[in-house]
Amino acid sequence: MLNARGILSVEGEFEEELDTEYGLGWRSPAYTYVFQQVADLGLFFGLPHEAAVRYNLTLEGALNPNAKSGDEVFRSLEVFSRQPANLTAADIAGTYGRVYCGTALASDFLELTTEVTPVTFDSQFNATLGSGTANIVSISGADEQAIGFDEPTEAEGPIPMNIQANGAILGDGDGIIGFVNKEAGYLDFSEHASATNEGAEFHKTMMVKLPASKPSIANKKYRLMMLSTEISGSGQNPLAMYASQFNTTMTMTSETTGTVSGTISEIRMPSGLGSNIEAESETLENGDFNVVIGNNGAATLTFADEEGSTVFNGFFGEGAKLGVFTVGSKDGTEHFTELGLAVLIDVTGR
Picture 1 (cartoon, rainbow, N blue to C red):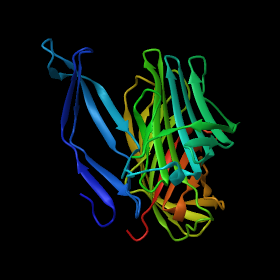
Picture 2 (cartoon, rainbow, N blue to C red; picture 1 turned 90 degrees about the vertical axis):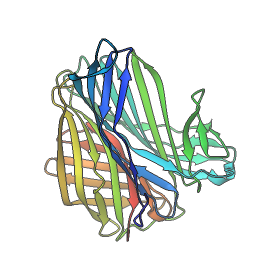
Picture 3 (cartoon, rainbow, N blue to C red; picture 1 turned 180 degrees about the vertical axis):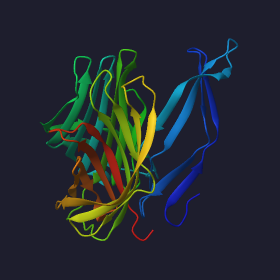
Picture 4 (cartoon, one colour; picture 1 turned 90 degrees about the horizontal axis):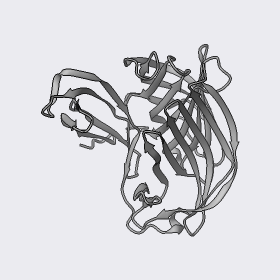
């Protein structure tokens, strides 16, 4: 159901899933998926907060409700869009703002990376990445604490992209990995590599087409969808995941200041991977932040208090209806130990 505020609700059902190869089953409660529409565009963003209970199976292969194996939680930044009817290279030619988040995981190693760069498309679906900035935090079995650092990224390209007339972005042998929206103002794609017992990599990219002039954000209200992961160290050190709830909004009180209110949920493994999951939430009430926005829509939002700081780096698109950002947080450290992605959706008057 889509209401007048651009909120789409989709009712999910109770699910039971069995994996007889590994002798496990899952039960997931019914869940209502809620998405926010980007005004005047066929784009919807959602950040589901899902959970499941894991059970062992009986000898006959049925789920055994008396043999609980553990709890699982899921957070995902989801988006869907209207497809273009006949997208051409000329439609996307121009400069976009790109934000990226990657995860590399092995048996004794975990690394998170975010990047912020401009990307220019020519008239042949070729993309050239401009120079930018990367933030990285990693841990290994030999580290007592997470190692964080930042570094410049070099220009790269042109890189040919396989983009179809219906907006589908194709990967190398992986089928559809993403899309271009109907208005060609937003690109989104996800990739993975080496998803085996030896390790895995996951990559998420979002781009907005940059405006020709500095967009105005004063007196606008945005719905915030943010998802991030904090690495405090290796071994028995905490691992945490943060996600904004749907009630979280940001109000721009001027072109350079704003306030944020809502709820941030935290899922934490206090003793590292394999420890029991703990869940809690934090209520935000008119928390202050500062904004610096450039002529091409590039923007930095900074939230700071006595405990540390959080920085959103990214871009607003045309009319500042949609913004995409990387997230970096630090608490008394020189470099970020928490990294992720965020989306800002204009809901002024809705």
